[in-house]
Image (cartoon, rainbow, N blue to C red; front, side, top):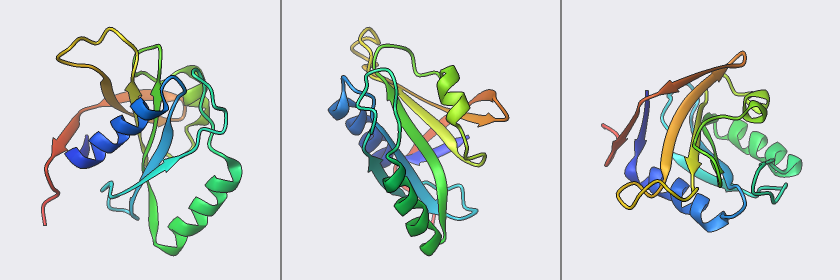
Length: 143
């Protein structure tokens, strides 16, 4: 299960909406081994595409170094789908290289309804296998 604060969830969704009609992408880092998403890191979609996302290789290299220095790891890798449901595509699965990460997808496609204007779903992707997991939204993490 992914446990995430309402603030972080809202920031991911806001990024997805702001970059629409292109896919948005980014990371939420957390202390190594904690499985606690804490630091929101929106990234530039180097592909600038409504159907594909790609982290800029230079930005990603810098991020890896920064996270190593801070003893952090990828807790969430997120991106949006602009015209389809929030479910990993074959391309998404082929790029899933962080085995401990939660892969969050946000769909900004129309048709989710007024009461649910977007989809926010989380998956584990390991060795090409997709497993959806529950998402628990909390106001704050326990002390």
